[in-house]
Length: 178
Image (cartoon, rainbow, N blue to C red; front, side, top):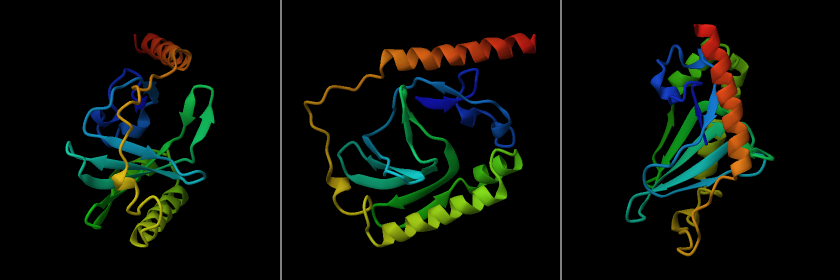
């Protein structure tokens, strides 16, 4: 599942100054790219995505700042905070998408106080990473999936419920455009 525009397009297809003026929908999607492991520490307003190349060389920890994850009957619910942190395998770091957070604040999606809190969380993450605290220690880059694991499937009922709600929203919005 990924966030999308109501017509199914990826959010990044909308110009930055318009991106947060459009409603959001959930779309079923297939991951493209190399191996990735997503870790959502309990109670933390972020998740960590570990990226590897095709030969399992660890590339980076990509930290997505977001609401604390909450489980519901359809899966996990969270909301992206726009700001991200990249911690490369060599230890270099980068805070990214500050322009996207600024655009979200300008559009009223977040307040200036929210943005300040997100920046505070990014600084906390950098501190944990510098101290090599979990999950930024040496263990997770060595993780490998069990080759016997089947490819997980999204539960049909969860997907159908979200897909139906998205389709209903598109139909209503489409009727208003005509």
